[in-house]
Amino acid sequence: MVSSENRVFIISNDIVPSLGMPVAAPGLRAFGLAEGLRANGARVKTLVVKGFVDRQWMRFGKSVPHPMGPDTEVVGGWRLSRYLRTHAPATVIIINSNQVDNLGPIPGIKYVLDFFAPKMLEMLYHHSGEYPEKEISELRQRKIRAIKLADGFIVNGAKKVPYFLGWMLQADRDIRELPFEVVNMCAPLVFPGPAKTGPDAGGPVRFAVAGYLHSWSTLGSWVKVMEGHLGRSDVSLDLMVPWHWSVSEYEHTSRSDLDRLAGYGSVTTHGPMTFSNFQRFLSGIDVAIDLFEHNLEREYAMVTRSIIALACGVPVLHPPFTEVSPMIAEYDAGWLVDPDDTAALEGVISGIIEDPDGLRRKKENARKLAAAVIEPEVAVEPLVRMMEAW
Image 1: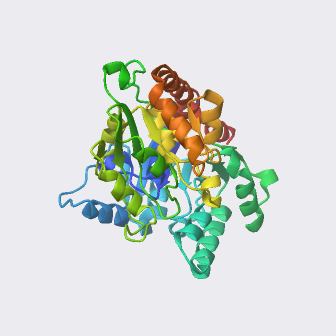
Image 2 (image 1 turned 90 degrees about the vertical axis):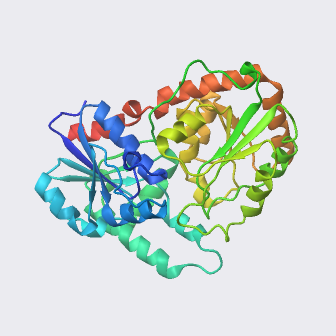
């Protein structure tokens, strides 16, 4: 347990659920860490930068002031360092490096840098065509500044540890003398009643694709395979795939696939949701489809939409190469399949539809995985050990 005297501030570089807007992965990372640390006895506050919050609130068409949770505060970026000096938390956790230029060393405060996502690879795949030398250089230097500031480090998944060590060497930090821990993505669990399936209630097997579509993630061959089943009365598909605010819908290679899927009578499309509504939506799904083509960024991805689906007790149809894949395999909490192998995809999807007992078993296993790995109080234990050692 963390002493209740240990005040922890988490600097999120994205919206968190208490702000009443749809959220993305970095905000959910901050939210999960806060929930876990709070369950371990820490007093936690999440800080979100004002300019970004205001822009997002207007982006979603709101004109009244955004709501504010009791443990969340919106702070101007240029005021972050002053705010920390005034309130003097023992530990400050920084999600990625976005706000490092608004921070600096402060006596009595320990900084923990979260290697949440492989941002350099995201940047590389976000830009098509020529190598984005200027953007990559600026991001590299910002990341090194954050590494030099930090007193300890957490890494979102074991596969990213070599990636993390490479960065430590670039920044001339002596990893022999600095604490670091793997702290997997976590989220509160939502299990409404027994693990039932659509067929248990006389309905269809309910598939869903739910999460932002990024420029570095392309859907792949599963779309055409799924289309072959959408005419069946015992199958439905929910699509909640809004365009992430960092990408234009007109540029994405998967747009035509999504438009085509949306035209089927058995397909229901949804707009962006708040996180609590998203959890309720997912808890009624039988299978989350989270398949995408392979690239280097996806190799290191702790894919948030799969983590949230599992936290809602939903098994996941997933590629075999991400940070989430070994979890699914260990608990038999879904299906790992090559997203380009159409024959394997056909076999898996047909098997899901034809075997309700097997589907129910996968849902039960998803709950076991979530309780053992994703539940926040459990997932943050390595971070708690680091903080206790300070």
